[in-house]
Length: 514
Image (tube, rainbow, N blue to C red; front, top):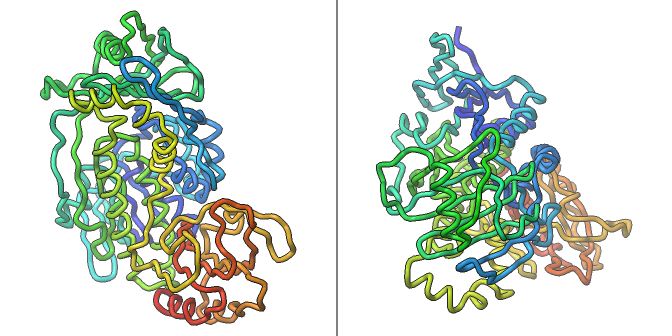
């Protein structure tokens, strides 16, 4: 007898775990399979940026991760070992103003715990060996840890199993891009003995000709030393030794006497990269997320973060379509939005001069103009916003409709966590009114009688809650009175209209809701 599930998620890395959590929160029957025998014990990615922390909050995971990590509040840039700029990592308009330093094995362990609290554990040691997609669903042939095979039928299947995705390859989806040549990253977790600050909330970037070194705090007092450099021996696959890393750190920092004491257990890594993006992220009942969908060099540490945000985007959409609340075209917006976000990250990180190993001309320019290029208030603000992912938007998406309203916030933008007054005059934050389990209709009143929207929402049977609020006059970036915002479950504005406009929300609901 064939086993039947709502969704099969292939891969139990951070993306697969986060997606399964999102779907189970909506009540879907989700099977997660992973060919590895258990959660990874490798450190790997070590930073979660602010937007991904908001996504994890919606999944009920952020509090545990923050408790297990280190909040990074400050950054410093050094060129030839000399301090050229310091900046505050905090950004406004969020409950998570600073990034979090936490290693990937800890992230996966905590996500797995959250998944188990919502249902079955991961099917460890279980490999997807074949996938078939039909008009109304899919089938996955699985091979278990005992070598026996079984077939699982499902309405949806999602490939989250990494660069060599069986789901992507089976569907014949091109993985467009190329290998990045002339670049490698070498890493070690260690405690340094050197002349630089070892503050527990400080990340430092050291720039030297041909090498960029990022030193970030870790839980327990150690640091991650992450160096981008050229690739003089492309065939070398061995992890770097202690002396190789010590010499590279000495070169980058200009401190010849630096010593590194490896963590226990020790961890080192050497990696090379591809820049690749799947031609599409949906093929009927099959979808792609995380490294199955996109890969790039980990400049800025956004690979894991992009996967977590993709799961956040896809989870509510897949549940809404599966449960018959929204039209199936909603899933196409996931593919378009996530491909655009991934392409934007790839483009930005290719020009991130603060982390790429500088060549002779770039390094000479940085040496001369570092206080202006790196230390300026403009550069500080731009760097903070870019790294937080708060400026990444879905304005071109078919799911974003702008029919009116004023102010800089537009359809497709992430809703900032601004202060407002509710109908009783109480002070609230906008994110307190949101929920990952539903849409939110925010009416920013202008003193008039407004438009009655409750009946409109009930007509479509949509999971939408209406809040009438007044903007705080002195709040930076406040939404002007007279504006209506229909906010998606993932916190992005779907519709912006004038608060008295009943036709715009009616047309929007008619377009997307069943």
